[in-house]
Image 1: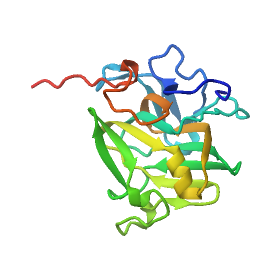
Image 2 (image 1 turned 60 degrees about the vertical axis):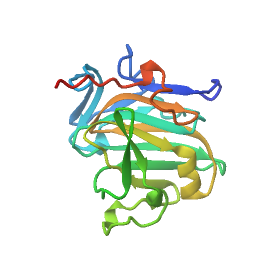
Image 3 (image 1 turned 180 degrees about the vertical axis):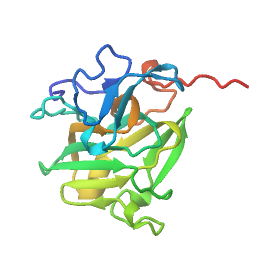
Length: 225
């Protein structure tokens, strides 16, 4: 899809304020909804994915199941709101062994040691704890909170702070640590219920809040004192 496109800096695949935010996405909804409500926290329209069964309500990109994204930028950033419900997303990548690998993150059972949240500007940025990047056991005794690596899929625990979060994924580092191979490109992105989305984009590196273009920032209203 983007294989023949010059890729540098930022490449956005979803923006909730666009006229057609799901133009290159497909959606599957069973006993739920995908709509664009007004979010009171940021005073703006967002994309909301809600479903009683997270597996059967999701959006996926590209819309054509036979197509691939072909995005070579190694960093994926998702601006997502924690709705205090179960939530999961999945990224499919291609490595230099020509093998398709999937990385799936979910908040089903999470211990606080698995992920560490750091502040980036005014938005929490979620990053993997260094000891949970690979197949090392979680520091705590919660066995269900361990990152698990299988030949074609790596499942990871995800902890979101309250409100809006910025999830940062270094796909090149994940691929190298989990499989000992090199990241080539991202093939597909799939986001399941339950969450609200502002933007999903790829970048060539991680940018500080000051370096981001204005349209990539999430402006939170000033709190009244």
